[in-house]
Amino acid sequence: MQWEVVIGLEIHVQLATQTKIFSGTSTAYGAAPNTQASAVDLAMPGTLPVANEQAFRYATMFGLAIDAEINRRSVFERKNYFYPDLPKGYQTTQLAQPIVGPGHVDIRLENGAEKRVRIHHAHLEEDAGKSLHEDYHGMTGIDLNRAGTPLIEIVTEPDMRSAEEAVAFARKLHGLVTSLGICDGDMSQGSMRFDVNVSIRPQGTDQLGTRTETKNLNSFRFMEAAIHHEVERQIDILEDGGEIVQETRLYNGDRDESRSMRTKEEANDYRYFPCPDLLPVEIDDAFIDSLRSAMPELPDAKEARFKADYGLSDYDAGLLSNNAATADYFEATAKTGGDAKLAANWILGELSARLNAAELNIKQSPVSAERLGTLVQRIADNTLSSSGAKKVFEALWNGDEADVDTIIDREGLKQVSDTGELEKLVDSVLADMGDQIAQYRAEDDPKKRKKLMGGFMGPLMKASKGQGNPKLLNEILQKKLEG
Image (tube, rainbow, N blue to C red):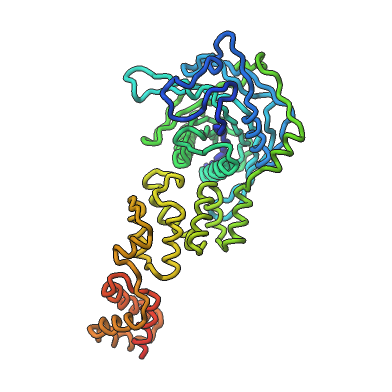
């Protein structure tokens, strides 16, 4: 039987406010456990929450970015459940009247196809604390610093049909919230967490299958692997005559394993009721219009500008524009280097490979945009060969504090472009290659001649210690061989 995969996502986005959603407690990351949890965050008797206006601004900006309905009136409810890192016994969230209504996000797949993913709604809520298992033998530690941190939970329709589509959407959403400046996007710190709802059904049918929810995926790689794992698990169960249980599951990316966490609750299991301590929040058109007029450049607009202003391909412009920090790094590199295409190649090639291997984001790059721009400039003006440029980049990556030109001079990496010197070099090398010259001149097939030409360039580059200008060497070589 052929199966169709149906995927919907719930994404928790931590808003970049300085304080929590209902108190003045700091949201700064990295503080000692339980030093940033106030009496209000824990709902101690006699305390009252006060809604954070900045959280509403950020949520509204997100709604505008996805062309969603912005609800003028939103209401907070209490979602009641027990968990060790939620000592108050409920979460303050929005259910019936969320701040952001239906909207959409358009994604582009690797084959160039475009697809629209519908957003059902996005609501404001507070985060819970964090349970720590690794450092405690036979016990669980509770850190309540995160309790009360403002989130928007974004709920999609079940519009995605593959792991590729889900990851493309997740990447687009990451680029959107970081470009807006409403979230720092650092998934290693839990700033974005993805819950993936997966079901399968026979190809050609419309009825949805029973879904499972895999919780708290904090990387695109783990999301993709978790979806593949869950799809295979469900297919195996159904093809063996079993039934899928609606449940919440946890995925271990290091082991590529998942396990059941609990059977899936329905909304009525949480006994939602309006929060008695918070009045409904109403916003007006002036509030929305002021935010709309101050919206930053979003990824789709930035991509179009990169193609128009820098002559980049759809692929390069799409990759560089989807992350605000990467886009800023590219523009700074291109400004210094003077060659946008070369700057894009180095950022998407050598730099990205190094950052990925070191598990760093571009803000943590040891090589600044200005220094990479100078390196690009020296490649463009033929001061450096490609091999020489890699040696300079290696020095920059490893923390060499000297400027690019100093490194070039110190290491003797300056490319030789003097035609007189290169001609002498070609004559010297060809003097010992009489048989190869004869073979080349006797060959009539252009493709074979081109291949034989490569047999000369290797010795020439070796003789020049990698510093000969390859283009000039090739031109001089052709003249000598044809002559």
